[in-house]
Image (cartoon, rainbow, N blue to C red; front, side, top):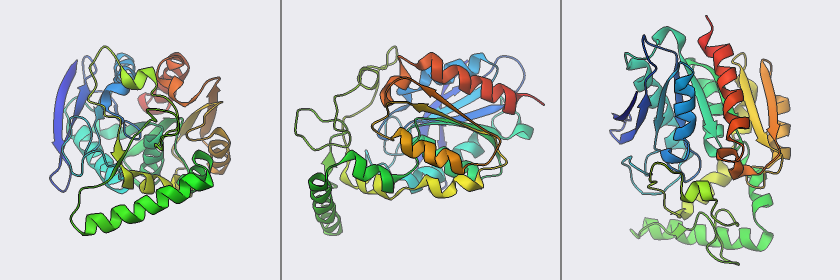
Length: 296
């Protein structure tokens, strides 16, 4: 059964999302959250899929996005998102549909894959995790995403934005996806269909984030936490042609993880995980959770 839910983060910000309750008695819980600049609608088909396998699943919008409160709007702040994820775990475990003795599993995609990795390394309530196309290194990703000239322009705008905010001006914004050739955006490619139209549920998604979100993206370095995930089982599912979070960087970080771990790939690009390769990404995640979270 799917319900619309809301809960408060520690600072009082109201976060909203969906709770998919398993049929019958209480079940092991999974907490999910969307990637960079996304909304819950982009990944709700994964939540439904995991619920059908006997899990109770919490899926929510990050603060400042979609149905959730929070200012500034459209700002990807991984440090706030990490704190919110731990509050989401608390909310999930407080629900009667969730077995409190099992802790939770985490599922994260893209930027949220990094959030899940860091949280698993630090929160003892996390039992296992499966992450796909994960952001693992902002410092290494940035120079591969943008040319030297583009990086210089972004740094100039970021400094200008910081000065403007100190003066009380509104945050500068930048497109998520380039709307025309030559436009500087977070991702220099067209808008993927699944992002624009994640039917059957209409999306609240907007094709913009605050400029500071780019700075946070460059700064965020989940790779530094990888060695601390063990002994929690972690699965990484990678796109073989990922030009957003970069397969070679992900493989390097995977090698620093300790067992138990598993690496899988699918022959596509970053955003194809959500539609064309849904079967190749959802089924292994379900198997991982059945093995490491639902078993006694």
